[in-house]
Image 1 (cartoon, rainbow, N blue to C red):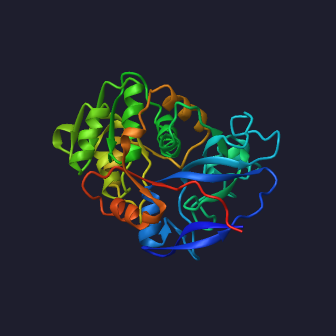
Image 2 (image 1 turned 45 degrees about the vertical axis):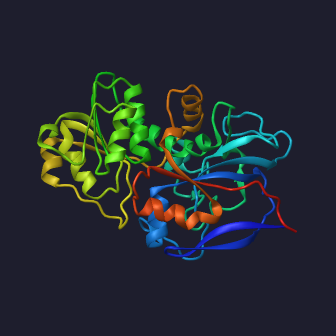
Image 3 (image 1 turned 180 degrees about the vertical axis):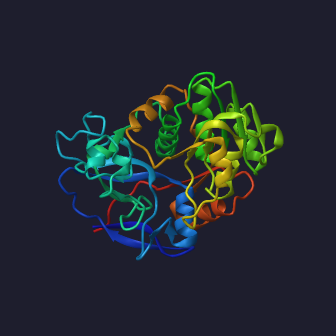
Length: 348
């Protein structure tokens, strides 16, 4: 049986192909994909054919922020929260597949697993296709209060939640976020929820600055201004990890924590050593997420975090190139781009 997939065959070029629906391995379920988010890391791979030092060496299906419906699952299957998983369940799928056996996994840091694979990052195909096999423990059943689009947004929310934890934010802290893309805007909401007393955002795009203030930022600017130099207890860099890293260091007060979330396109970042050293900054590197989906689901289901408001564009799979180009070019009004896949049946 076959189904449709959008395959990245060269930088900037998708081809629609028919892929075989593979038999599920032990511990896997078959998920019919419903919604896929376009991430900044997807844009790196789409434009450059690589992400960091990982090069795409053969055609690849992108897409790691996604939800779908379980269409095949053995009886007695449990999801990642040890809840029953059944055919017909709407699920969000964590794309990171850790080995579960290495030291990092045993110590509770599966996001640091050195033997992992990641859906949508070479060499493992992702979700821009009608059907995908996924480990059952990577699936999390969605309550009715979480929309399909909200389910796909749980992956970036998990990234933001993991970064927040690494920053050890305390009630009463002052905080800054560099970059008001989806991750930065989710951090704004999480920081507000955690009781910071000042929350500054830097972002060059005016519509994103406005949304940041609507979601809880107490001030916003297009770049680093002198009046915000060295003010903040904790700073989150959520941009492209280029000049944004230096901006984060400038905003941080002496002794502050700077959490680096962004991924540079060329695997290089720049921060003035003397500035970071003289301030005695703690530079904390955040990699993906660890044990966040259950908490992220509760935050969204209870209305504590608004993920749907970040979605500016929704395109069908047939328009996947347009979806990626709109994000890549930062066209007016773009914040978060989603791709939807229509219900379908595998073809014989």
